[in-house]
Length: 220
Image 1 (tube, rainbow, N blue to C red):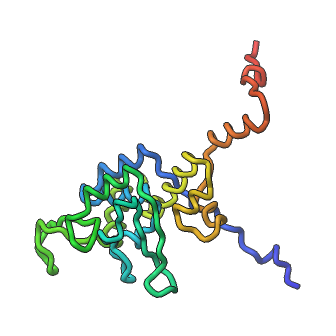
Image 2 (image 1 turned 90 degrees about the horizontal axis):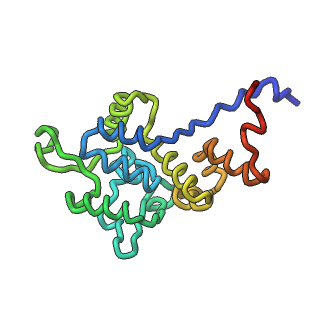
Image 3 (image 1 turned 60 degrees about the vertical axis):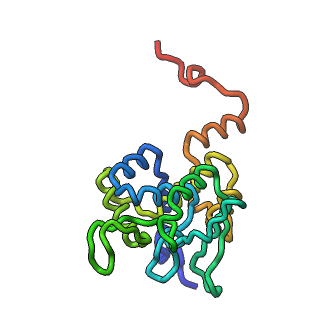
């Protein structure tokens, strides 16, 4: 048998990025105003851009009829081998309902739209059109670079959604449900507990706390 330890490459470190609120604000301040609602929405609902915006493979955009305000649910359609795509239902918080309500109705076929700046390629200046996945990617990368974080990707907003939900609830199964993962092991790759949360948990597990002075008394 081959010596697998000699030929296997080192497993790459997971790319998990949590965008803190301060960085989110910095990016939003550098984005076109009509693209900002998409960024906020992606962080709140944790879905892929291809399920929300016009994607090159023909999926999207999120349409008004996919939003049910009475049931407070949005039905997303993602890539799948199944005919019509994979459907995933996500409940709406009050904040998501307010955001969507402010966007819906601006275009008959899309929830999220932008205002054309020029008249060209069949578009008319001042009118609204569905935001394409590629356009959001370009605008996000430009704004993130201007905020000092050129390595950020739109997909990191999905990681951020998972992390924020995990930190708020402590429930990995709820995060799995939000992100629409079939296996919880996939969700674990999207999330990571921060050191403060882990430290607090260990204090509870290990019993009564000990003050730092007891561990490392001040030198005399």
